[in-house]
Length: 130
Image (cartoon, rainbow, N blue to C red; front, side):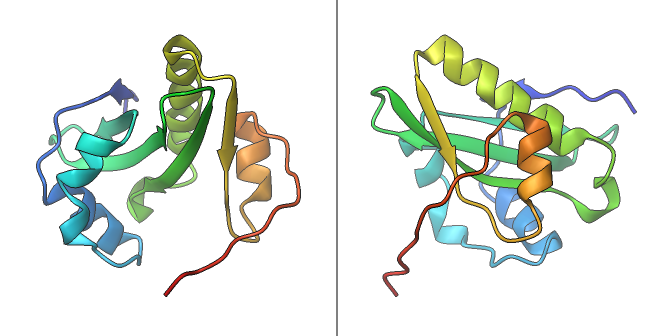
């Protein structure tokens, strides 16, 4: 399978919630299409049948700092390098966009994935408001 990461790929409102569900995350249907209107840019990968199999985005204020969010690859397509290619395409788009700092928050066990994709692990914190 040829991997073609497309920046700002046209995506129907149900496609990202469907992918979120496949990987075991909550659907969050109400986030779409609002996410596409509010993030700086997104990227996706489709399989040969045209199904969305990978997705991620960068959000922020459009200033020098962006946040890499919701990197996901359908379970059937994981461990093939698709996620790394997706993140690297988002990093290149961030450079073109003029971002100088890009951060990501990830769960334990994902540190190596983000290192391979180009990030340096650092300490940080998170606060859940609900």
